[in-house]
Image (cartoon, rainbow, N blue to C red):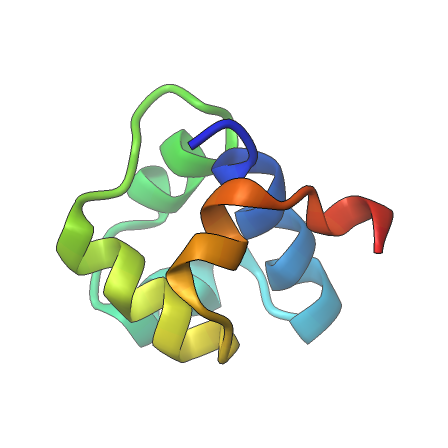
Length: 70
């Protein structure tokens, strides 16, 4: 889960949505999205599935790859 924080922020920005919009779309609070992006907490398995579906990427790509360099 080394890259998940950076990847969530990067993908959210690529999609052009705010933390607030992402939170609404995933039915969580904005502060939860912020805590994921800042690495203060890690997404649950259920949230990883939601993020994977939202960004249309396999979970292992979200977790293992540094998407900011691609």
